[in-house]
Image (tube, rainbow, N blue to C red):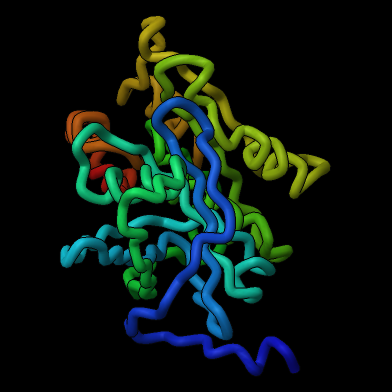
Length: 251
């Protein structure tokens, strides 16, 4: 009854959103939870939302993939993980939510659902290799949750998470929960690579996983400098394996 009463919109109107919780996961990565009063956004695998902020006569809009659980979505929450960059338009606005600077005009936030879903078919592939850098982890969490919650699914997932250092291993508690979500055996595993320490994700290392499988798919997510060279090398190495990319907007 309560769920049916929610306005689950499937087009793209912008709805007012209030900040209900905010925290810094490290020096530059923000975790922020919005609440939509009387409304909800239910995203599918790989779908993103548009966050709009209005302040001082300016309107800024950016797209992000939420990491909200299904139950929290239905309760009207939208949870985002965003990297704050120096002089970034949205970053500067979000920074005011962290510092609670009363000398500045408070931004008015709105959120819309973008219907650009990830073309996933259950059990089409025996294995999915995910490679993510930085906040590119968010689409991977979104997709992995969707796949793992289906009891009829047999698809296995391995995630390689590229970070600068240990401070950048945010959301690891969620990754550990995904490992425990399916047992005997678990269908989700992950590993962390510290690229400043020389642990680089290469097309060859990814191919080492996918070449052992009867059917595999590769998902890449992160900034262009991470994805584009890797995607080009993977396609050149093996054109038979489908490679999909998810960009990250950190501005």
